[in-house]
Length: 275
Ligand SMILES: C[S@@+](CC[C@H](N)C(=O)[O-])C[C@H]1O[C@@H](n2cnc3c(N)ncnc32)[C@H](O)[C@@H]1O
Image 1 (cartoon, rainbow, N blue to C red):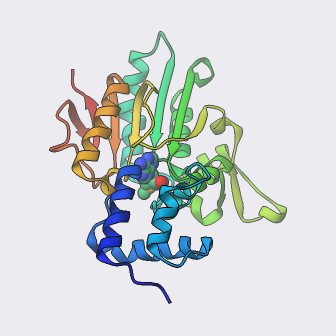
Image 2 (cartoon, rainbow, N blue to C red):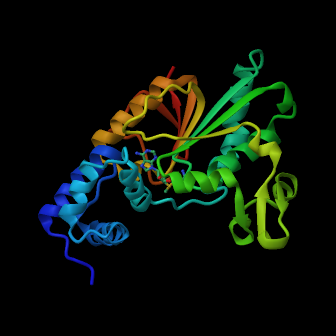
């Protein structure tokens, strides 16, 4: 039987999680958290939430268990070309402006912040490669980061079941993926053209320094889990690493209203640093 998580214990974990990950668990999500904690408890052979809480505080393995908990509580829902209109805007509005600004330096930096299992960063890489005819002459780096190490491993592998790549336009599928045979039959793997410019890294927005100077940052469907204070800090950090005239793409349900007024809304949750 799943042991009951008392209000007091819920509060302890809620605070711990907010402090380390930024995610705010509302009271409505108490049973979701209880379920996730129970699976960690049984994995460690612990009998109470309090024992688990102390285990986390005094983790002798340098934070390993905290990482496992983080992997369990993060929501990695994603898909290729999610919010497809944003990718159309990336191709037709955002990239043309950046390419014009950077035509001499030929240096392009994009960050997929909260990349989950990689569908977002590969979608970006496809659009960039397709759009830049002379892409080989450009110094392109696309940074893909997430706090969830399981999601990152999956992203790095780049191996997706067929039904996962349904939203990928057929021309892109043909150009950028390879169909697997044998034990991976029914899967497609991302090809070298996309991989060559992508760097995968673990990064916790609440802990790590932000140093990747970016022309475009995608941070979509991440802030919805954060409260206003955490959102403000995160956006301020993004502001500090965005180039002048840089773009910030948020999820459709996210906005900068009441968070930061140093950006102009371009369209569909795409923002540009104000002049
Ligand atoms: C719903 S997914 C969004 C994936 C993708 N950006 C998209 O829109 O399809 C949210 C991601 O944010 C990551 N995340 C949550 N808190 C984080 C933190 N503090 N630092 C870094 N990543 C975090 C989660 O691990 C998860 O993979």
